[in-house]
Length: 82
View 1: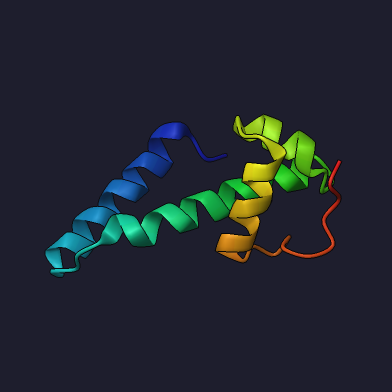
View 2: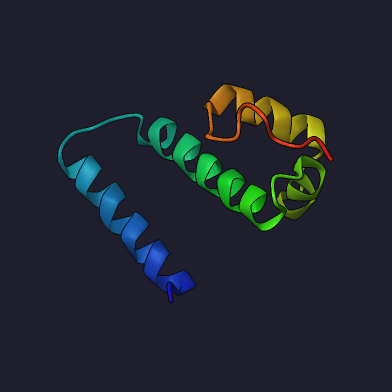
């Protein structure tokens, strides 16, 4: 089981490594990955029902649909709208 502290520690280690390597704009890389992951898991928990997944994420269904299109998640086509 992954605990809150362990993923935060992993994120901290990744950010530290990226900055140590001189990489810039790491938030631009991390944010879409973070959002895509949460969207995919929310859709998994709701059997693809976007309205319910959006509710789990604290978004409206239109926001979720827009994010899916922007991020190109695995649920970008064929997902249920309700």
